[in-house]
Structures are given as structure tokens and as C-alpha cells.
Amino acid sequence: MHRHGELRLRVEKIIYFDSPEEADTELTLHAAKERAETLKIRDIVVASTSGATGVKACKIFKGFNLIIVRHHTGFEQPDVQQMRPELESEILRSGAKLLTATHALSGVERSIRRKLNTYGPVEILAEGLKLLGNGLKVCIEIAVMAADAGLISVERDCVAVAGSGGGADTAVVLKPAHSNNFFELYVREIVVKPRSRG
Image (cartoon, rainbow, N blue to C red; front, top):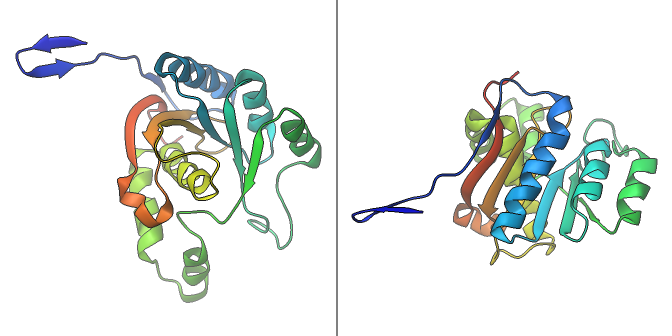
């Protein structure tokens, strides 16, 4: 922290990947852990579709309040959960919490778009957040989902980790919020982010 008159500055490191790559998952998770430890943050929320990123997170975030957020059942095919059963079991054995819920930034609006070929305000908001990267949009979304499920408190900052496709390439520190108070959420820091969409 440096003082220049009334101006206070904090200089922190941000990792930028040239493009989203699944191979960057472990570096992203380790950078997120390092920042969480520095800031004494115990709540970690990680997006994982197949469960592979979730299993890696379980090994790195031992001792944290770790929430793995997966796609809702039926995301791609009716009644089908995309997370591999053996990876789901490994995540649960590790002591992490597993969250399956309606996606906060699409939900029923996705069905309206598909049926009526029109966007609603929630999906427009999601598209706007993607200007900062798909991973950053997902970080915000999973933090809201975890707060709504009562797995993290909106009174404490958390670290959220997500990806632009496969694996993880984005990590942020944020103040979470419930979906009914969405605009109280605030992204405090970007820890890791890709520079391009891929």
C-alpha cells in the first residue's frame, strides 16, 4: 500500500494467459489458493462440468470451505448429469461440497430464448458480463448460486474459479450476493484471466 496525498494504491499481480487452455487449470487453482491465503479467505467456489477440475481443486484446497458447482442435470440431455460418477464420488470423499442448481444467469430464460427466439434481461446481462471473459461471467454466476444455496456467506469475500471452456483459466476475489440482491455483488480483484476468447 502506497500513499500519495489522498490517493491510496495497492499493487498486486495478475496472471494473464494469451488464450484459454485446459492445461492452465492447475496454475489457475494454485494462483487462486495463494491469493485466498494472502487475504485469509476460506470460501472457494469452483466450476466443474465433468468433475476433473473439481478433483484437482479438492487436492489443492484442502482445509478450505470448497464448493464445486456443476451444470444442472439436463443441461445437454434430459435427465443426464454431465459430471462423471467416479469424479463426483472422489469430490464428495474429499469433503468438498457439491452444488447442482439452476444456473443463476440463465435459468428459465434460456428456455424462453430457445422456444421464442428472444433474449430476456438476465441472459442479456450474462452476455454483457462475457465482455470480460466467459470465465469471469461464470465466476460471478457460481458465487451467486453458492450464496443462494447457503454454502457461502454474503458477509465474507470468496474466491471464485471458472473457465472459458474446458478446465479453469479465470480466478477472482469477490463479495458474493444472493440472486435477489444481485447488484450488491462486487468483483474486488482479478487474479487470473485469459487475454483472448480463444
